Image (tube, rainbow, N blue to C red; front, side, top):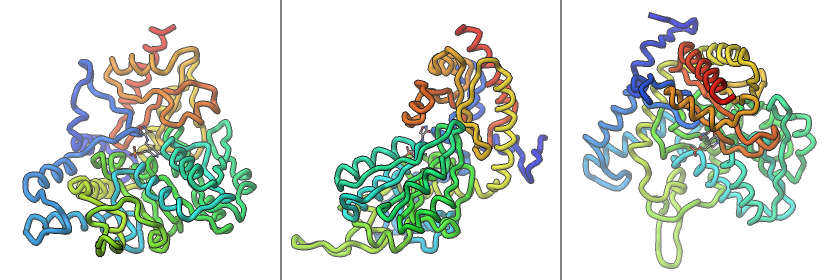
Length: 411
Ligand code: 7TS
């Protein structure tokens, strides 16, 4: 049995937790390297989903009956797990959402009533579209201006420029923790500290970071932090927004409806306390509970072990891929996670992705919802292999052979 150098990391045992990893695609063993898009789900989480629908499926926060109470208890237990995982001060600072995109839109909507003409929002050149478009919409609505921290050829933010962009007009800084397209880990500690010096709030998008690291929102002193369960071995359609209590109290509700009210008359409605003020309607109850189970699962493996193992995979894959002539990697920061975006000279990424799929290898090709990054490099897109802790060096070898084959077929 192989035991990795990282403590207690038993890759054979871990892979057995993921039933999907033993399926075949196009007659070949699946090599799943599209974890940046969505992660796979372990039996421990699948069992929780089956248990919910088999035993206590009911609406929450409203029934006196046993099933509703059981579902409510489990759902709130999941919120507490998320609170503990991110080290939020209060459970009511965790808002359950449908995912990162909704979390960002919730905050952007809230700032609609706080910003005016002349205010500035800073985003980074490394953002996913879901981190650009809501702020553009907010600027259109409020007259605020969107300003961008530039990047360099390694795919790193130019921090000197960031310092120059900050001013008393800066009201909000928005940056992802880790870039989905390049894997760059951004210096969020410094970004948060500098933004606070001019009185701006900071929202960090942790969608790509949370599968790899365990953020401590109090130590970071971040104002908002967002993530999606489906990139953390949980189900799709559920995610979280952490917000400092004071900020969440300041922002208006995002959606009106059931569950988010204290009192309703036709003349006036008063809103429920946190977190319910932001949780209108029936949520993804099963998803929320499964999100808690996914967090338990990841912590059971341990983030230090995950990071150490994934770093080995990254180094191994980078070295092997660079041996292929004409292969260029985009995103070469020393500070990056297990994502490799690359192209073969003169070959469209889509064509490579199609051949890899025939070989059972799942990668993402295209602009990765980060068109400004592709524009910077003047390319239509990349082939992106994004590794998780359940991938292996043998799978990297299959990828490398697949890329060689694709190159041969396409040149
Ligand atoms: N922010 C980042 C940094 C992301 O990578 C993604 C999804 C999102 C936000 C949106 O997350 P959602 O769960 O609300 O959809 N990124 C990707 C990707 O890289 N490939 O597919 C989805």
